[in-house]
Length: 132
Image 1: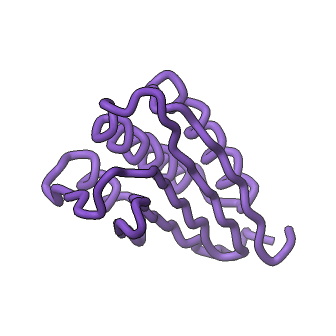
Image 2: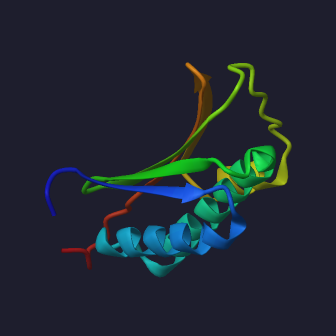
């Protein structure tokens, strides 16, 4: 694998396409040799992040959101972003999807700047003696 690789998806705000995001997440995590449990955590986090984006933007049903997978030797960083009308987009930290993401990923953050809402999640790869 090159030092850093990036995969970008643009998906409609429609729950029917969450499976495409999950499949991509699974594929890239597998490429980085994450174990089965880590891959499942990543898939769950991506599903919950997509569900949150779709739920919070259902009024914008003709819009799209973007998912970027940044791959490096020791981690996967996933950024979900969507254009919003207001930089005061509020996040409810007690919302179930966000609690699930925080539980299964190593890092979680959200920000809203210049009309773009970003959710960033990361999972670090734990090297084992079996990894090559």
